[in-house]
Length: 328
Ligand SMILES: NC(=O)c1ccc[n+]([C@@H]2O[C@H](COP(=O)([O-])OP(=O)(O)OC[C@H]3O[C@@H](n4cnc5c(N)ncnc54)[C@H](O)[C@@H]3O)[C@@H](O)[C@H]2O)c1
Ligand SMILES: O=C(O)C[C@H](O)C(=O)O
Picture (cartoon, rainbow, N blue to C red):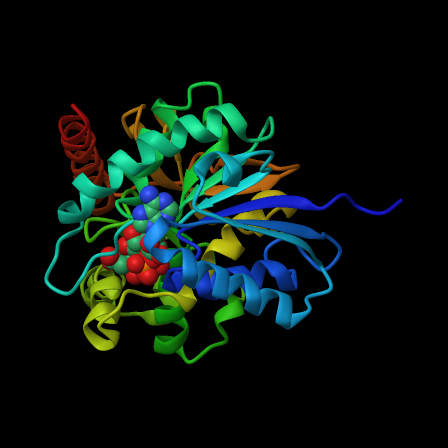
């Protein structure tokens, strides 16, 4: 029997991440080579013409898996019947801006789009928030879409996870696919904690292979934390191809499962694991199976790491307060 197409919403689809992401989805990068898709692309009226141009290019590319394209500025039309929602729409950070600067504009978008998803998306719709502040936008979406199960609302920290793998692979001159089980804890911001205490290369501990704690506890962490800003400085635009590719990795692993013995980082609703306050969307190490994620339990956390886990949790609590003040 032919597989039913998955309906996939991409908001902000006329933007730069959207432009990189929609062909990846249409080519099977997000759901695999056997899953047909119907793309629902949403943007705002000033971007309507550009959005239609993206639709024209999707038609021209003749992707065999692409069974339809909805390109619209109507949020209800965009959200109707979607099985997956990749929320990229919003205002990106520009050079010199802190992520908090984009908060006011973006959280109100997430409040109103939460209601549209709650009313019109398919039951059990899975949501990935990419737009910054990603964790807090996801939290706002969760709070204003109470009928969507909280386990279905996540945010993107896979880009940071992949950045950590990339830095270790460059430092050790090994294949990036051999580096496993890094962790991004906390916020998708410069307080995130990239942790390699449990990471391995072909089964050997990264810390032993690198044999330079000063670098791992200093420059490595800072490089991953600041990578988004470094890309903005270099491109004068925020990361797009790596963000799109990591969004595909996030959903693919969530839906199709993580490989045996491997975990990934996802921003998910905290249940209090690792003494992270419940009620925040926080990045944890997770494994996925049967369409569900599960926080990896029982990892040892040393004193250095504990402080870093707490610091990024504090920032998220402050963002939550600020977000609510922006909405009131
Ligand atoms: N979590 C991550 O790892 C990560 C990485 C990179 C970028 N980002 C964030 O992703 C977001 C998008 O980045 P970009 O570079 O594609 O920006 P962009 O400005 O190129 O595109 C954003 C698009 O969103 C649209 N938009 C604005 N308001 C909207 C609304 N209410 N509904 C639907 N669409 C709307 C804009 O018209 C635009 O087309 C930014 O917030 C950026 O900071 C997150
Ligand atoms: O840091 C940013 O604002 C851009 C983006 O979130 C990134 O990590 O590349």
